[in-house]
Length: 267
Ligand SMILES: Nc1nc2c(ncn2[C@@H]2O[C@H](COP(=O)(O)OP(=O)(O)OP(=O)(O)O)[C@@H](O)[C@H]2O)c(=O)[nH]1
Ligand SMILES: [Mg+2]
Image 1 (spheres, rainbow, N blue to C red):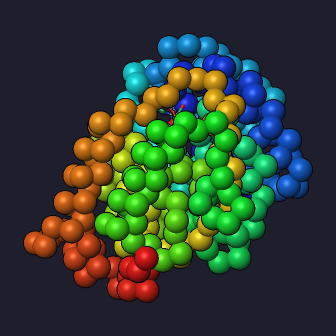
Image 2 (cartoon, rainbow, N blue to C red):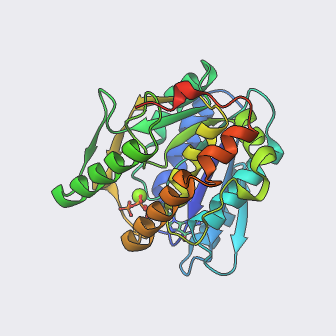
């Protein structure tokens, strides 16, 4: 089975574009699928639209009355997915602002099934790229990825910040049972949770890979919800928590988790 996870906040313009593409791609793959959407206190017609899709597609809605942020939503989505999945299943998380094209899902699923625990849709892999991204934003994104590569090096990875990824469901179940409430710990710090998941999975010996991906920023309908200052603060907090010499994540979790692979800890 393929489980699709969508965090959604005020996405009434994008959902009518994304959902039909998701349906046709997933149906074409000839495998059972389920789409779990977290509608995080949207103030527009997101909930109404999702209820209409749920009548004709295998869509499950997690509804937060109040906007709780991407971290809380990711916690709910991944916990729900880990309850539903079995060994061999693949979890795909993508944005629903119509910049992540579902056409990349089959290559991600194939790579996960070939033995990778985390497969990232990568703008920086050969054959990848981005359309419609301003020079300034592309520069900021490059700097953020460079920062992540220096402080959280993961072998074979060039793309750290893109949320379009596939996960081996069994590894997510392992992560949730190992970390419990702390798999996604940094909740109130903007989009830091996207990097935290990678770091936590690295610490339990996950194998990482990438597939080339074209970010369609030219198709973006909704306004950006990324608050750069809060997310940057989150990255700094996480860097301290990870590298802190006395009981930081790196030393503590390495000690506790026998399978931690030093081979992952290289650029
Ligand atoms: N559940 C939830 N989802 C959110 C929240 N903020 C953003 N999202 C969703 O997370 C995804 C990423 O948000 P975006 O605004 O596209 O952020 P980004 O891709 O980092 O940057 P831009 O595309 O430039 O805006 C989208 O699917 C949003 O709907 C939130 O507070 N809660
Ligand atoms: Mg986006």
